[in-house]
Image 1 (cartoon, rainbow, N blue to C red):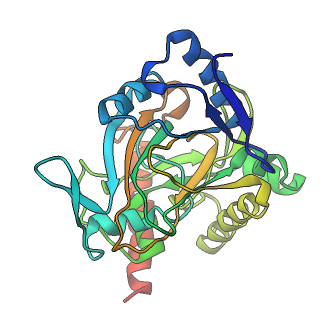
Image 2 (image 1 turned 90 degrees about the vertical axis):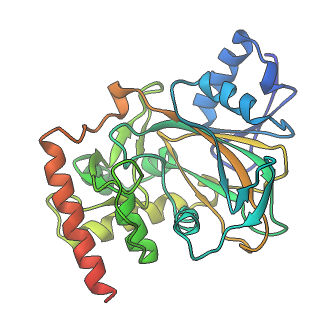
Length: 310
């Protein structure tokens, strides 16, 4: 093996990888690294200091990108390329950032959900601003039998319009080209990983409206499942960012969230997200007849959330 692997102490998942330069790895090394990624679910690469182009090129090794080298930051980029001006908390961009402080997996609100994601640290606050991950594989494996069987028979709709409204009371302006596009996609609560064959829960803040259950029953079950996943410290990891770190995780089997921090301090991460394979990550497209039900369920839920906050 062309690199060093150190499993995260006292955790059931994750590893730190050292003695590797991601900007220059060859195909054989990447193949070994990819198998390590599948095994551990997430990998930490300290002191990589990738440029934005290198971040994109490394991410492209995993597949087609949803986006590459996108600043996930509370600062705007100035004309000289530096991140300087702090973004006001009372903006949609910061409300979206703050929404990501709740447990989720990426892009379940698109027709094709994400395969994996990468973050590179450029600026980190003095305190807070960590990224946490949770293992939905171990969460599923440790469910009581009756609850596991129940979850396997159910699905939930996913929408980031729902999660923003539910978590923050935020109702963003709808735009079909943004993440707030008015669609909600039905996904099973239990997922079989397309490459490892391991089952895991597939839940998080974007999930709502389990068909066949009342609104209260649906919310209670989703909360019960999420609370179970994150209740065991061995299933949760908190990454303390240092500039130059790169964090890679599998969106098909892990939850993640940002941690709060002093929003007047700079926090700049560069993110690239890899699109999932249609064979395993496609729910359906907006022109599919099933999408009509999702739109109706989302609008009904948003109407209730608005009335609750009136």
